[in-house]
Each structure stands twice: as C-alpha cells, then as structure tokens.
Amino acid sequence: MTTHSPFSEDMHNKGAVMERAERYDIDLDRFWQDPYPDLAQMRKRAAVVYVPQLQAYLITRRDDIFHQEKKVAVFSSEQPDGLMVQLMGENMMRKDGDAHMQERRAIFPTVSPKTVRDHWLAQFQTLTQDVLAELVPRGGCDLVRDYAMVVSGEALKRITGLTNLTAFEMDQVSQHMIDGCANYAGDADIERRCHAATDRIDACISARLAQPLDPEDRSLLAVQQRAGLKDAAIRANIKLAISGGQNEPRDAIAGTVWALLRHRDQLQQVLSGQISWMQAFEEYARWISPIGMSPRRVAQEYQLQGATLLPGDRVFLMYGSGNRDERIFERPDVFDLHRDCAAAISFGAGPHFCAGAWLSKALISQVALPMLFEAAQDLRLSGDTQFGGWAFRGPISVPVTWSVPPN
Image 1 (cartoon, rainbow, N blue to C red):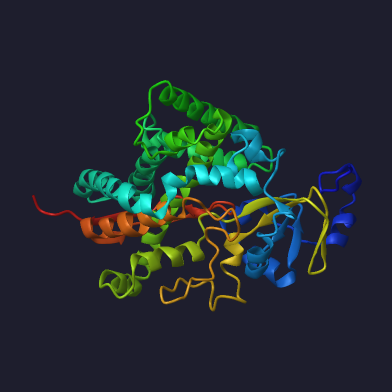
Image 2: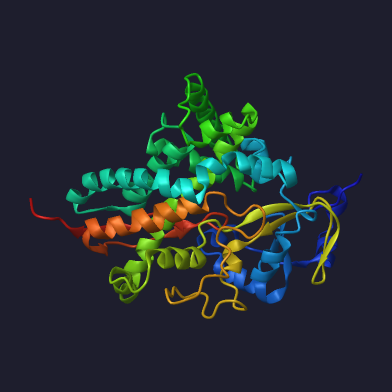
C-alpha cells in the first residue's frame, strides 16, 4: 500500500503540504530557547499546522489534543521507523491496544499508587535526607546539578532496579537518549551519544539479570521479569522509564523551586499551608511542561478542522502548547498557584497517560520540595536561570544560596 507523508518523493512539492494544513516556519534555535511565542501563533492560526523544520504536523490546542489522543486507530503510537524505536527498542509507549495494555499491566506493581505510598515513599524520603545532609553545610549550589539531578537519579536507580548506575550516570544516559529521540535534524554526534547510552544501560541490565532477583523486589526490572515479558521488551521499557523518569522530576523539582523563589508571595502561602506543594508542582507542570510533546503516526486518512492528514504523516501532540491554551486557561503565561489545573494535560490524556505519574508526584510534591525548603533556610536565587527545550523543557541551571545553620 502506498503511504503519503512529508518524507515521500511525491510530497517534494511544498504546495501539496500547504493544501493539507497551513505551513508554519520556525527558527529551531529560537524555538528551543522559547517555544511559547511560536506555539501561541500556531494556536491562533489553525487547529493543525505543518512545520517543515520538524517534518511534522503539530496539534497545539488543548481540547484537540485531549480528544484526538484517544483516537488510537488514527493517531497511532506504533512507529517502527521512529527515532525512539530505532534508538531504544520497541517499548510500551510505541504500542497500542492489547500489546500496550499487557506491558502496562506488567509494570503496575511498580508504579501503582499503593506501591508508591507503601514502598517507595519512605525510600524517597531517606535518599533525599542523605542528599540534603551533604548539601546543606555548603550554603549554596546549582539546584539542577547538585540537588534535583541527584534526588531524581537516586530514586530512578531504585525504581528501575539499575542500582549499578550512579545518579550522575543515570542523568547522563537519560539526557543522551532524550536528545537522540528529539534528533530530527539527524545530528551524528547526538546519535552516537544516544547509542553509547543505550549500550551502557543494556550492560547494567545484563549485569543485574546475571544475579538472582529478590522475590520481593518491586523494581521495573524485577516485576517485568516475573510477569514473563521478553528480554527485548524489558530492556526497552527500562530505557523508556529512564528517558522520561529522570529528566521530568529533575526539571520539575528545580523549576518549581525557581518559580516559587521568583513569586515569593505565593511561596509564603505554600510555606504557611494555604496552598499545597502538589498545587505548586501541578501549576509549574502546566506553565513549563517538562514533557512538551508526544509523537504519533497517522494510521488512516483523517480530517481535523479543515486539515487533511494522510497515512504515514507524523503528528506531534504539543502538551506544552495545550497547557497554555487561552481558550482553557485565563492568563496562561502567568504562574498562578490559585489556578485550577484540572484541565492541564501535563501527563498526557489518552491510554498512554504517563504510567509513572504517581511516582513523580510523590517524589516531587511530598519529598523533594518540602524537604528542601525545610532544610535550606532562607533559600534564595543567586544568579540567572536559563531554560531550554520544547520536546522536553527545563532549567539548565538554578544557582541558589541559603543560610548555613551554626555548628
């Protein structure tokens, strides 16, 4: 069967794309630095725009994303030629229907709300206490590198079962895989680093599987093995967990702290108990979506508000744009802890809703944020913060200082 997509020879005429959806050009560097002005223009212009620099059709309005993501017969997660599958293997995020649900059920003993409450929460508190005990006497740090990255990495070591990686290595392999999966420009160095990262993860998995796993082990490695998943699926799903499970908590921890320190009146309401830490995290995740988009492959011809999508087309569901949709959120570009975030799609909206959402919420809102502000008295920003990314977005560094307690 002949398929049609922006990559096909018969689509070399840009006019053919223009007839199917409005074209919108971006500057890739500027889009990485700050995607929100362009995303606002896309939302204003049309329900779907074609961005040639990304070779993809972008759906940017919140309600369109929310409803269309559920139509898996049209917007398929199965992307055998996609970057994620090529670089990391075919994980559960790249499967639909029964195949997806089978693997999702297999990992549920690791990620369920009950497991988070009864098993992981105490471990998160202990590891964070250890990180803070070493950090607080220094009186200052880069929150991304010295706190958020370490807390996220140490938690993910336990969740995945790859305790033979350091927190720094966990962060490094995660970032290199993320960069590889967003490498739509085909940068050879980025691809090389991604392959090195997946090789390192495979070596760690092999080393752990060479030893008997504790029958009470709740890690992803152990529960998938007990569920009888094939080796390729186990490896691919652990890589998936690392690619999203490291950067999202890391960036959300550091980013939420930055936002609160920039809005000290709202911070005081959190510290006094008027507003919860969970509200702070959820509003940050709406405002600066750590996971900014999710790709889909069009499986059958489809019309969406005047745009024609054909089999093989690549579509990006732009969560970061939907979370700032003026149709849904009043003053969407403003960080406001009094906002109702129920309509936010920070973790997705369909059957691929983030399986690790409860883990992330617990680590960030119940542990990393409150424990930091309790331990680091008079916490304040001490330098400029730069953000970057559009597929994944977060602060590059957040320099802070605090008062060192007397000996």
